[in-house]
Image (cartoon, rainbow, N blue to C red; front, side):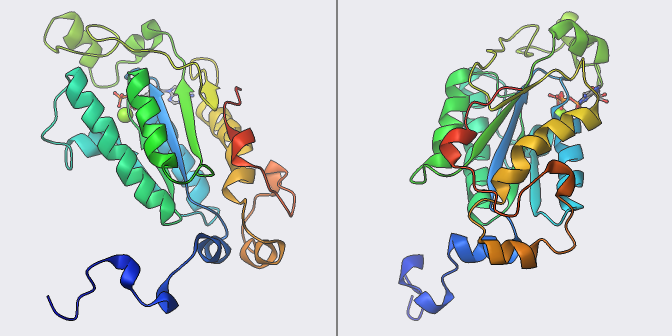
Length: 243
Ligand SMILES: Nc1ncnc2c1ncn2[C@@H]1O[C@H](COP(=O)(O)OP(=O)(O)OP(=O)(O)O)[C@@H](O)[C@H]1O
Ligand SMILES: [Mg+2]
């Protein structure tokens, strides 16, 4: 078609927004926060609590919740190992796009297989080793999750009315390489969000120059997280910090 650039990189460079410009305008960089854990371990609850906390501090956030995704873009997928892999792959690609656009993308998926989570990490960091994929493992005994049984799925799985249900009739491979591990059976929502913020606050504001921090941080309260004016944390040290 005439007049339409064949590829986006042929666009006029005047309109190219670099990651540094985006970060200085938004006051933070985009990252991916990936919650994994058994059904009822608290992924959706913590994703929404974290979203609320960050949005109230002026951070752009998008939550990709497994239930919403399975009811929309991934409605063609089931719960076989192959379909779960594809579910994770698509969410990782969407999260990558959002993070590159400067958003904190919060994914909340059971994502039970180690190989699929590693693939998600590889997608997010593809071509950008500094991109932050922050895996949050909600380490909760299955008995606790089953007692919670928010929507009755554990009861259905026990009665053989729900097949391939993670924790009962399908496996959950606990990760060993998470940036953050939280016991939601031992700590309340506020304490968990506080732990998440201890990790995230300095990292989502890396790359923002000092002068930009001063102007962009106005009206935003990160003070309770002891973020120093120049909070530069290399992505490599951001990996695999257990709490
Ligand atoms: N510290 C905590 N963090 C998160 N949830 C908690 C915590 N303590 C108790 N809960 C409770 O655990 C339940 C977790 O339900 P939630 O829907 O968030 O789980 P989920 O991991 O998203 O499950 P699913 O995989 O089925 O979507 C909620 O009832 C929540 O109130
Ligand atoms: Mg959920």
